[in-house]
Length: 106
Image 1 (cartoon, rainbow, N blue to C red):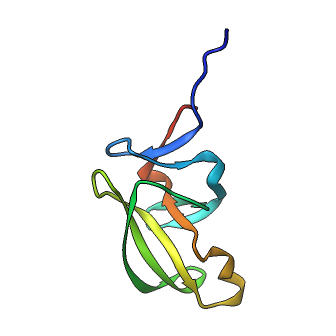
Image 2 (cartoon, one colour):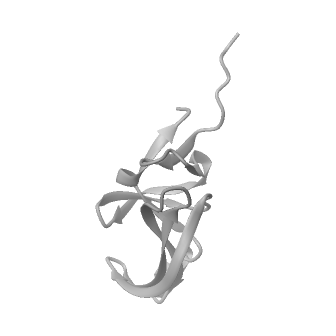
Image 3 (cartoon, rainbow, N blue to C red):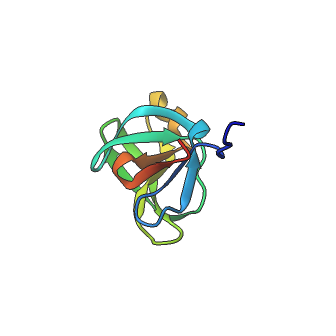
């Protein structure tokens, strides 16, 4: 019999709190503050910070930092608003930095 492992997840590197499913990854070709980052359609067990306008590589966006709900480690941000038409697809999506998350059940 094969061993069943649950769904592939991403967890906070600090406390291993589950923050997203692998199936929610939209792209692995993003840049965070500290290197590579992934764009996710959904995340869980995070706290959203205050909204603020930030100049990113792709232009001006309104974003809210997202932190682990267990240990408060800042994991990335949520795109609240994109001001350029070509960036609108990011609205409501999340960036999690690769250096802040780890794989579970792979």
